[in-house]
Length: 328
Image (cartoon, rainbow, N blue to C red; front, side, top):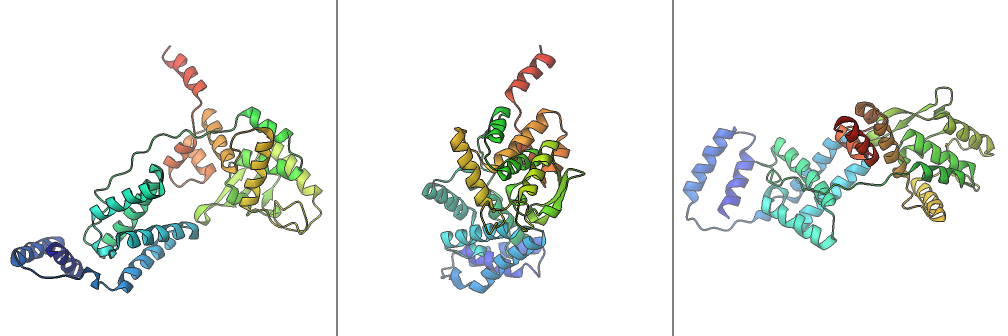
């Protein structure tokens, strides 16, 4: 109880004292209050102050360029913590966070990756609170990265890609598969494309990635032909690049493309056919053929090169060839 009171007084004096002065203040209060008995209502911190801190953090992240989807995830994660711990953010301690993360994992049977994502968001939030003098020290500092096992995700084989292409019954579906496979763009980027965005002469188009970041992606000659065939066959005037097969020919959404590909995969007996798998396949193929990782990072639109390395899986057959070449 005494410790809570001292910490709260220190927090309120943050704008007026430097670190050395704050330490002297803590020592003086600890000595003076030793053996004292009193009650302390930690809930006395106004709810508005706590809410303002969360809103201010979200605003700061919005200015940094985070998407609304990411900001919504941040907000829900932080609000879930506050509700779960039952304390104001200024009163949250490291042990509170550890208990919360353990209970969250047990109750929701979450993976280690999910728990580490939550830890990273909370670390960002409390570090920001510390920088902005809302709190003395981030309680996440002593909670280290959650160790996660290496999860090697599948890619499409050349045979699987050709099998999908050969069994498309619609020109649109063939063009979608080729577009995903040759550009490595996100499906969320593809559904935003319009016909006028495509430069057939240069075989390229501009997409808007996460955080509305703009970049150029490129497609191959086969994609160009199949895309032109599809567009020439259309009778509608919708500017969207990909639309539904039936009137009123609405723009395709992410869910519609996922369902279409899943149905195709099920019909062909292929395992886990999903738009994102094309992106991972292109990354693996590019690394496999010697594309510099920095160029691949630019192509995929990754902010951090670590993300690119996670996407690119080295084929085991090439490891064997490299071993024979360099080791014997």
